[in-house]
Amino acid sequence: MAKHDDSASNTPPASSEAGVYQAPQATLSDSSFTHLNPNSTDSVANSPSNTYRGRRGRLSLALLVTANLLPLLGVLFFDWNVGALIILYWSENLVLGFYNILKMATSGGLSAVFPSLFFLIHYGGFCAVHGFFILSFLFDVPPSFGDAPPWPLFLIFLQLLFDVVEQVFALAPREWIIAFIGLFISHGYSFVSNFLMANEREVATVKGLMAAPYRRIVILHVAIIAGGFAVMSLGQPLFLLIILVGLKTVMDIALHLREHKRAEVRP
Image (spheres, rainbow, N blue to C red):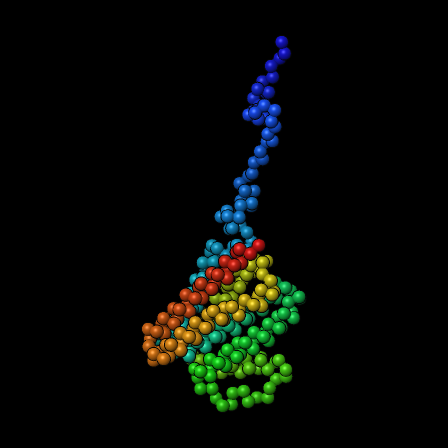
């Protein structure tokens, strides 16, 4: 009689049906499953482009809200009017443009030099015309505005921007600079924390960055200017000025979260 092999008896059958071969199934470890499953929470948290969530994201959002509420102090305690609010929100475009050039330089290196210069002139001219429009409707612009000899060629757009900035600082309330610094710090922290440390730069492109600030201006400032003129037409009551600050804050939060959510879902 042949000797019985115990090891063979402990081996599971290859198939429940005779003559059919069933290949052994590979098992996946938890880490490999997390890597393959795009809906996994750990995958989202550990991906370099998805680290906006957590402490950095909360602090970035908190700074943004704080910076947006500083103008409320100006309205409540320093008698800021619609003009002071709108030129502050316009000046935020300059802050965005400054950090956007830093983003382009960080993402593209030497290849971003020409696009950055083009963006500086084009975006600067866009902000200049936008700012001149605001000044013309909300303030009495001095007759001497723009009397200096024009700069050559396309540099005239930068000249107009410098002239508008000079008028803004001359017309703005003294406390206005505190709110402006608050916006500068808020966007600066977002640049360092979200773009550099959270590696959003890894998925950013110079071409995409060139267009990003324009979308924000169109969405946000059309609503702010329309709301500002509505408040003026009603005599600028305090509660409407507070509503205008709240409107801008809510829209800014929505645009902020949308921007970083886009960075999360990019491949």
